Image 1 (cartoon, rainbow, N blue to C red):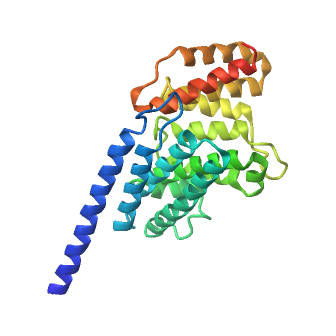
Image 2 (cartoon, rainbow, N blue to C red; image 1 turned 120 degrees about the horizontal axis):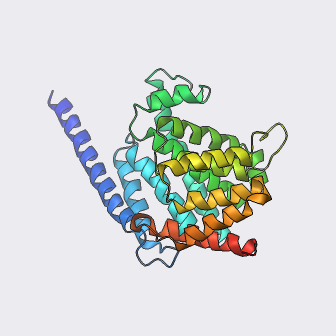
Amino acid sequence: MRKTIGCLGMVCLFSVAAMAQVAEGDQHWALRAEGHQAGHAKAAQVDAAIAAYQRAIAQNPNDIEPRWKLLRALRFKGMYVATTADEKKQVYNEGKAAGKEALALVDRQLASRGIKSPADAGEKQVADAARAIPGAGEVFLWDSINWGEWALVYGKLAAVRQGAADRIKREATIAMLVDPKLEGGAPARVLGRLYDQTPRVPFLTGWASSKEAIRLLNESLKIDPSNKITRTFLAEALVDNDSDNKPQAIQILKEVIAAPNPPDYEVEQAAATEDARALLKKWGA
């Protein structure tokens, strides 16, 4: 009896320690823009957040929260801190490995809810079960985003051949079915970008469509109308779908540049502003 009580006490101590590490990671995450220059951030705060989330996972491997937050932090580091292709590849490969572990944990919890083979189950079936698992939707979302960034740095066609596009599509769709409002409409934003940027390869990605991308990006904007990332993606998709849309797209980009950046997403939105300027320059506007 005493041994059982002692074991339970140790589990509680590990859980409390893990929660403290998550809280520390969150504090560093909130400071990720510290010392940034436009859309480029310094490494110190996000590295500290990553380390704290990793410690939390080591303390309590069955907790989903630090796993999805680790995926989010790794994506930020790869996108806004890393400056070379090799640095980005290293970060996104780490993100892929962390995502694999996080999804394995989610799959075990899905299995306990009757989804014995999540990889073979329909997206709605998985989403319906995942909705009852705190943090599962975020795992699907951030893993899909990390895979998307990995695909960009390794090359779109190479990623298609490895099945990355279909993986991103499935995971982002599940995330959207779990909660379309995640991260300001991010699931539809990810899908919209995917539909627009994925090369159309016969028998592999025939579903790619800038028209569908526009629909999805507009769905994302309904949730967060001021999001500069979504608006910049939409402007590009409009022109990809029909060059006659360029005046409308140019107006969207000018509005993006003129709008202030929200303080909670200073780096991310500043980077989108830079992307908007680059598109305008590319279009000669």
